[in-house]
Image 1 (cartoon, rainbow, N blue to C red):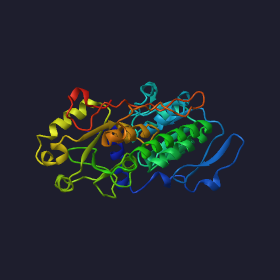
Image 2 (image 1 turned 60 degrees about the horizontal axis):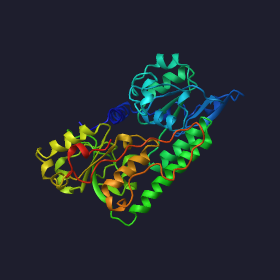
Image 3 (image 1 turned 45 degrees about the vertical axis):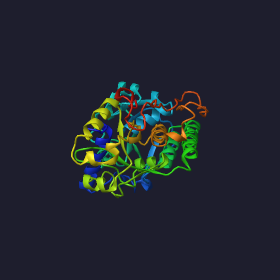
Image 4 (image 1 turned 90 degrees about the vertical axis):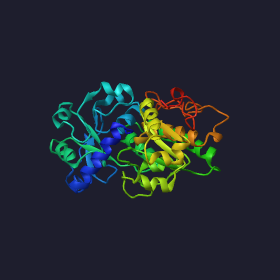
Length: 354
């Protein structure tokens, strides 16, 4: 099945929220009047409007979302990360951190044993129960909630400022803006490609119009044929056949998974009558597109190169060219080399992105 474990967790978390009738923002939104100001602590407001008290200097961090773990590494603050979730697998070094369980049901006992100064959470992935349990132990949690590519950049800069690395955050944000602007300049005069972003094939699940993934598609010169207000809508294949997207887009951490699925689609009823399947117009990009973190810029470029090869014909992909230098101690967000052709007319073993 074409879905990254992180995205599966996101969908599961969304279902939890739908049926719980509560959100993280209900936890500490009215706590500000009772928060005493001391020299050792400061008050900050997170991205969902909660006022929380955090230490002046934050040295021990637990991340409860893969995108937050990636961001910590991109900021060069990984030495402060003392724990993360089972799904925090990028960069590979993150897998060596102490694991506190899943994003939806982390072990509060394990988190407490790590004595964090701050726990990082996201509104749509982590649960209110987790935030409340941490609050009862006096462990502050800071929530992020970006819905667009621009918001991801701003969120990265805010997080860097919170953690005492504002210069690094600014440099990283400027670099992301530069790279995305360069893509926009290349494809500005080209028509948008209509695409179906496939989260899952059976049942068929795609993305809603208000997700950061849909916004990333726009930055890559594409537009989703699915116009839904739901984040992860279930789609009728008959409707997709009617809409006839020019490309099917898949996000995969392992290219062999995508190759197997795209081969299979040509033999499945319904799928095989799609023009995109007949013409083997598949775009397979890094699963970085599933995470609102600095690597989103790399995923946008990967997709743009596949959908609009004519705009990049004169130069090979190069994420390092003219990159803005980051302050000492920070790390450049990692990218995946591009190997996928615009259609699958080349041999399969050469046609998949890393």
